[in-house]
Each structure stands twice: as C-alpha cells, then as structure tokens.
Length: 446
Ligand code: GUN
Ligand code: ZN
Image (cartoon, rainbow, N blue to C red; front, side, top):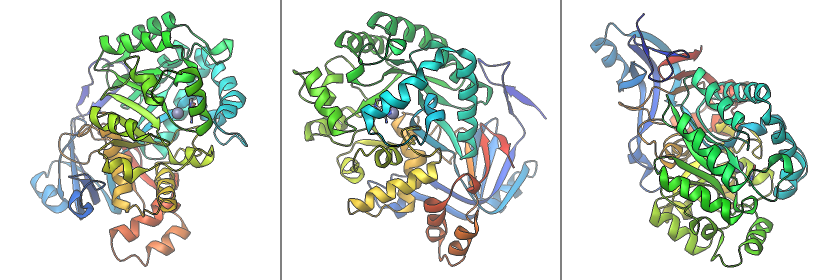
C-alpha cells in the first residue's frame, strides 16, 4: 500500500493512497433542505458507492457502475448500511467530558458548581491529554469526525487537544477559552495574556494539518471590555481564524450581560462593539434573540449553533430553528458536551426534533441529517470540505446500521422508505448504530 504523508504532521499519521470503494445506501445533499424543498436537496442511492482516493472522496454514484469503472479499487460492502458524511459537532467543551450529566443546576450555578472546578485541572498537561484523547475517541465511536471545542484558559489544554486530533488525523476547531473576570482565580487570565497566549497558539496550530484555530472568549460576562477588545484586535489581525463564543442562552444570563454592559444595545452588541462579530464567528445557543440581533447575524453571514440536548438539560429554552433559517441565519448543530447530555449527534438530532415539536415544527429526517453534517460544516465555513458526501470533500464518513438494537430493528422492519427507516435510528440510536467510521480515507473501525 502507498501512503501519502499529510503536510505538517509527517510523524503522526499518513493517508492511504489505495483507491477504496464503499458500497451501501448513500445519503448526501446537493442543497439546503431547511430553506428549500428538501426533496430537491437530497442525493440518495439505495445501491450507492463512494470512491475514495488520497484521503478524499473522488466520486459518488451508483455502486455497480463505480465498481466496473474502477476494478482496482478495494471494496468494502456495507450491504444495507447507510453511508453518510461524518457528523460535525459545531460546539462542545472537551474539558467537560468528565462532568457530563451533572445534576440539578441551571447555567451560572452549573458553571460555578461543576464546570469551573473541573476546568481548573487542565493546567496539568497529562490530564488534558488523557481527556482530549478520550473525548475524540468517544466522538469517533458516535460517528462524529469533526469536533469544535472550547479548551480552558491553559495553553496546555489547547496543545493537548490539537495533538490528540492530529494523532487521529481529525479536522478539528479549537481555541484557548479566555476569561479575566467572574471566574475563580485559577481560571482567570488577563486581557494581555489572553491576547498573547491565543496569538502564540494560533500561530502554532491554525492551518497545521487539519487544525483550525478559533479565538475563544468564553462569553461576555467572563471577559472585561479590555479583554474583548484585545481578542477583537487579534481576530482583525488573523481574519481567517474562526471566533467562537456563547450568546443569549438563558434569561438570567442576558439580564447579567445588561448589567455588565449598560451601553450595549443587546447581547450581540457586546461582541460587535469589540470587533467580535463577523462571518467567521460562531455563536453558541442563541435562543433568546432580539430582532436586531437576528438581522445583524444574517447580514454578516455569522453562524449560530443549536445545542438542543444542552438547552433542555440546563433548562435554557426552545431555539427557533425555522425562524432563524427563514431569516437566512446560518445554523450549525452541536452536542455542547458537557452542558449537553450526550456525545451522540443522533441523540442531538432527536433533541432538535423534540424542540421543533414544542415549537410546532416537525423537522424532516433530511433536515436533521443536513444540520448534523452540511449545516455544521457551513457554519464552520468548511462547506464542501467536511460534512459532505461528494467529490472533493475529505473522506470523513460514517456508516449507520439502521437496525442496531431490537427496538429500532422492529420499527425499521415496517419502514416504507429511507426516511421511515432512518428516523427510528435518529430518535433511538446511539453509538451502537455506528457501523463504521472513516477519517480522511482511513478506516477507524469495522
Ligand atoms: N456559557 C458560558 N460558558 C458555558 C459553558 O461552558 N457551557 C454552556 N452551555 N454555556 C456556557
Ligand atoms: Zn458551550
């Protein structure tokens, strides 16, 4: 077998150069099923194929036709398995993996009680490395091939995450979480050290292999105006980086932001005033938005990230997915681990469906699958590169078993079409539904 060394990480991994053909049912997208007719946005083949070469998808189409055109390709036949793009988690916190499912608190109490004590441990590089590796392996086991993660204030936590991702050849987005107020001493930096550390880290990691750096102020209550301004300046100096933060998650949080920033027009303005609003910005949660904020996000092409298991678990509210999509706001989907209660993007789609129902909207399985793949990739400004089952995309691929448990199998057995067969797995599936995962053309499990 010939291996291509991926630039920047010659020591850590290589991509197989053998042509590979995956056979099975294939589901991809050629349009946005949230804003248009979903039937026209779907590319489905009940006997499809995905041809991989050099870590990328080079063709999709009818499986038999691809096989006869490429007799040299090594074939993996998944039978009735459903081949999709790998899931893209557009917002999570790897340092919170160990405290997922912690009982009884809403946002600010939850941060103080569970999150901050755990995040204080990530100055220990060995602990950070262990949790980073564990988190990425849990993600892969759940069919997620890209994570977008907050780290902690410790630069070692950022190195640990990017190193663990490089060792797995995963495309990830991450950054040092900056906080210089309203956090314990052990988790506070300053405006200057946040700027300096973030600059050093982004120069080290942004564009190295499959790594993307996101400048990361946690949220405006934990950053002084000076820190927000310093990070806004850093973003202006490095405009191809992403920027991630939180926005309008809970009502008491919004009231607190109003107290801390009395001159701001709204929560979004606390970012805009300091250069932290732009197309490459990712705003997690975004539940309780004012009309001005929605219009501004749409105007600039900034993305919001829906974190439905977190929103129900922490008691935050009901995200208006369809309202935002209709207003032309880019929306990604995310677990928000460990405020979110699951590592699974299947469970995350299920929670998005449930929140939709509570708002009177029944999201179609095509819309849910698009959000978990293409929608998140577009939010990260990586559309066509990841989260896409089509030529030119990296071969980050997940294969679903649509009969992974007896409960799911008995329901799927009476399905009349793909969507009826897939929806029980979306609603009831977990890591047992992940039949296989490919990362940049390399098989992770079988
Ligand atoms: N807002 C600020 N920090 C956090 C966090 O870690 N999790 C969630 N869900 N919301 C936040
Ligand atoms: Zn978050």
